[in-house]
Length: 340
Image 1 (tube, rainbow, N blue to C red):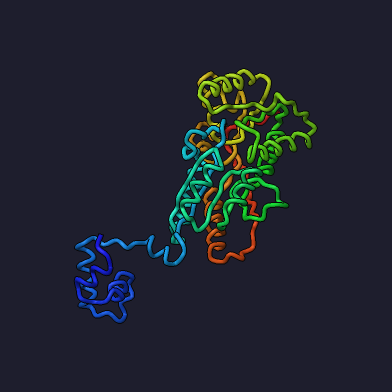
Image 2: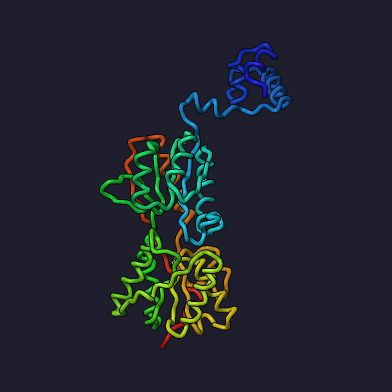
């Protein structure tokens, strides 16, 4: 690739003049010189060396995003297929681009591996998604860059970082309460795990049952594995329990869609024979029939806030750390039957 120095020598002008034309600082450059420089730039398809410029400014203009996948989670093998994660990443990518940065992503179920790779990127800041206490402490100890966490859970007394979360417990509480208000007393909770956001949603479910005087039993938690053969077994078990439970409250729209489709394939009508609810209000909730009654969250807002808070830290290292909890909203659609 031709360099600024070579262009200057070719045209017998200073490197400063060439640089000014490249960067649009042409107030004191003659139109003839601008045309000559631009002609050479086009002829040699010159591309500015952004890395060299950023290194001179002691910054990379790269924002990293580290995502921890979880064994057994329904999107373990390809996390980007998860509708919530893909929508969140899309929002982050757009906000990063608008802020003048570049995005690099690393996904692993081992946080040590993730941190080792990210250390080679020389990022200006890092967004971390879905970590728990011990992993968060590792990030704190090994990463000295500006940080923003999303949907992460750590000991507040030892972690002072920006964390953007959601009213997960409240959302599940309100959904369970809605089912109870519709006459349901036998409500199962369907999830692929009981950690992080799923744990908070499970707590909200339990809280609403307790307030209504409904006794929870361990068998009311129905585990749905992401592995194809085990998932089939989990769906069969749920199908066999449609005479025991009137409603199946799922921790994600993905699970609710799978349950509804499986019921349909085996002659169980939703909501006539069994009610099903979800959480997230993503594309799954609107594509299945009946459309899913679910808990709405806004991943677009979550992603943009994360980037805004991170860029603020990058530009001003003394920025106060914030904990942001975004609101939820019930979306009542067609998958719940009222029992009189």
